[in-house]
Image (cartoon, rainbow, N blue to C red; front, side, top):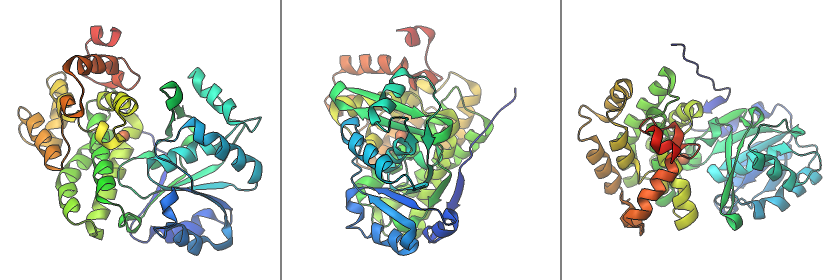
Length: 367
Ligand SMILES: [Fe+2]
């Protein structure tokens, strides 16, 4: 069978990589899109210091899990006031990069509702205008810097929209572990577990290919080794760098497979219970692993390489790993009854990402 792997994002990696920005911009003006605390953490000053007059504006009101209600004003002001800006520089976690992906797609009217209406159809469309995106993750986990997808939430309607266009691939992922040194323990943990979830989800996935498998196996091995040590030594640049590289590999793996059942479950857990993404997509991993084992010999072989010699006790080992990091792994730990959990998993199996899971039966997908 022919395999196909595609990822057009240039990766620039290593301590001090931020200093490559002027070369990467090559004279173009940039808008910095970042989170409110970035100024206080000194990140905005660092970018200003590197870019000088090339930095046209700073949009620092990005909130976790960007919502249509908050994005509309930012989007319309950006396209109205900064027509001359060619590059969006997203500095932050998944929410900053997802917000930048929404901002980079211009509508004919300049209105944000036009974009939401296009996304609501679920069909591909050709954007009226686009800007170039350079993604600078300050967390090691989201993978958004090497994928074309963004999730935009509409909490008012309990919905989420997926932005996914050929134009929304970042042009550069600039990964500088020095920018991750100030990450608090909670975000380090959540993003690290998100990366673990991306790697495993790309293995128990109908879209897996030998290249995504290689990246995912390596990412899982690295994260199992590095994340517990990093949680005890948050200021260690070497461990930050290794975790950043693992998250990058996981991102490259799932950029070709998309995620699967654990992420499908996570969306409901985040909408209904407000659980942060990295926790919501990782607490079900042992349960999903248990369901994945035994369906396909080739997937079992890759899971064995990723998780160790014996698959039989791998779900218990994975649960222990996650629980030792302080994250509970059962639905009941989050106040979800057995019946609701069963319904949620069934619903998640039929979701867009859930359908990628190798362990679904035809009846479950139709349910
Ligand atoms: Fe994720």
